[in-house]
Length: 387
Image (cartoon, rainbow, N blue to C red; front, side, top):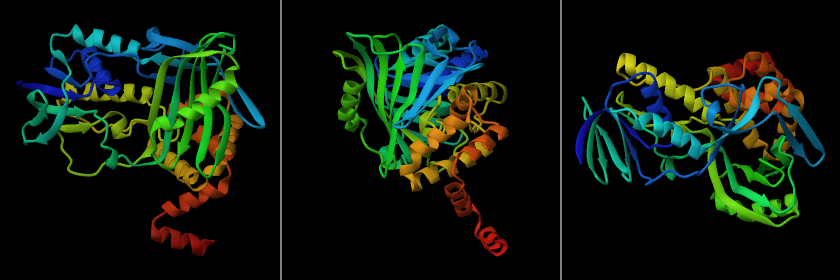
């Protein structure tokens, strides 16, 4: 295999397919290839977010909840969304929708069962060495996962669970349990994530925010314990879902190339303070596609505002210093914010007014400390004098 294309997309997951679909929808006629190791697509994950009832992906939303709850041992906070609802998209439905779009485009090829190995910039074009031969491209968008030794984050969100079905009715399908039974200690935050589809069916995940990365299957026993506590009924596991999400991912350093762009989760697409990423990836795909068509170049696009990135970094650093306080902080946030405000904070870009509400809800000392640590040395000296 040897060929030349205008754009090679390495990895046909959420980011890769989103970009390819956006290019087709915006009328690109450039030659595009998607290099994807998997043979076929399966329902391997779910994506959730807060959004209005109608949006570009509403046709493939599998379930919505207007109510959701956050709880700890001594507190239950109920939220109702007036403008926003909590929505779920099954990965297979998203894959199928994107593939239907790109496979009808004569200028786009999806090449399955091919793995990219090395990528090198040769000045006027890029060489991709794959296990099936060479591909030359004018530009490359690389969405492949980071090698484990380069994947560094302030906090890790690790979960184990799956779709389950019970013999007895156990769930209220009108209410999503986003962070239920929260508890925290020196290891970090633990909670149960419950998305009920019917009184008998739900997606349940045992989730931990930890300071060290560990394999998701290390939570399998805790998931089983949580399942037994929640259901008190005979349960069948229909589908497994595990994951490890970086929160506050360290920036990749190394040579920069205007022809090669890192993208997706490996490039920091997830919201640092919550782990939500679907809507951010969609915004990224549209912006990159628009620029590629009009300017024939790849742009650096960072989801969210500069204020959001700075505040998220302070929040995560404070969380890393005081992991035993995590459940109290998230409970305080849920109490202070309305349903719509909580949804905007978690999966959209918060406004300054919303950030002020968040700051007001949380204890000031840990965050002031992290802000002080981040000041330049000269500024810290001046602050000491002023104090």
